[in-house]
Figure 1: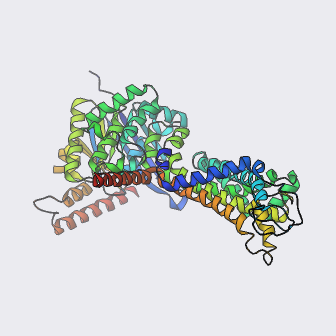
Figure 2: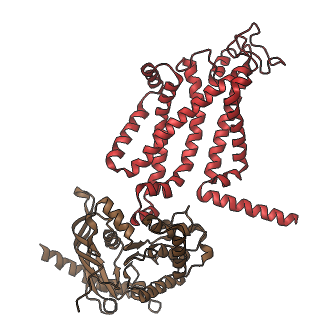
Figure 3: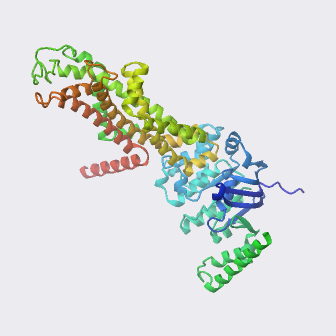
Length: 288
Length: 289
């Protein structure tokens, strides 16, 4: 049996912002491949390049080298028209971190969820309304909320509306950029359960970005660790969390607070930081 | 939004006043009891049964001049506002979407228009196109357009960088779709406020131009012209400027009230306002029941 074709293939991806002395490398040499049905977590501190990676997948980041293929199409080199067509196909969708900012305050949530289908323009009004209602049911939102505006919903309901908007086009790849970091723990669990259910019922591929190890562990089966724009570790989530290989991952795991022990001892973290600094020094020496 | 707008008393009053002004604009010259250009020996007469608002320095009936001056004043004002609205708002919104070349060129053009001295430009335009009110209004409209450009651009920039616009772009939305669905509703309230201000300014501008003999030649009546001429006879008839001033004031006030009402009725604030009013009305009903 032949190997299934990856949904997402990233090869030697470099992304840089600005020019001249102000130029900043956000990603360098990122290589990654996601198979259908896989759920991959991306973890790293702020500024590590997590969101840039997701934006590059959607063709929104200035790619300077390498390629990003979504279902075989190089999204970094699409013309304006091709990008619109690609968007209308609904193959890849994005869920933003803050649902309040990602939903138009002057649009009812029904209109927000219907919008991708209306842009696509293949269905009539009744079919779109039916699809929206079905999607509302899928994300466990009551139909009575359809005519509400985002400001009239709770944070958790808003994020489920945002997920419904992303899922209404039946995407094959769903990018979630810190989808639960703005939510309380009860709503966080609901969203994570929703994603679990989605995975169980469809062969959707998830790229789940977070700085929270707990959320990553709850949803994904593979985890990528980003540090300073480079992928420093890529492996099964359980292994990355329990037996991290890279010093940065060890520091990340060691710094994660838990209910029972709080953050790792200050001494342990100091040792991990020293270990990371040594690794970076040897890396820099190897490069020169 | 119109339904929400009509629930506001201020909007109803403003629209009522503007309706009266519109009637005067259309039927003013017919309603005028005397010939607005025909002088008489009865100069600077006080209000009487024969001349409700008195007469001016050449004995012309003030009420007739105000009524006959309405079409020129209001139509010219609307011309200024309309020209500025179209020439400013559309490029203002598009400057965010049509790429850096259009953005750069339109911004430099607007900077140039802002730098032009107002009266010199108006005189030059009337010299170039002929001394007519429409030519003068095109000149004024062109000079006011940067105001609309900047307001529209600023409002669009805020929306264009929002995540919901990004979400729509990711879904394959065209620029037209984004403008219709997400931008227009948010740009409209500041534009409406600017429009009302411009309509008010337009009335005052006409008076300045009449005073200088640009576009409108005496004795053609305009509200601003009547006000300007009355100001010369303050020692003889101190209250004379009150009549043209009141009609200008009421018209400008109505435009401003309408602009405020549009701002209140638009978007989220409108929904909150209507919600609060409905709740208050329900409470009042419960108390009386």
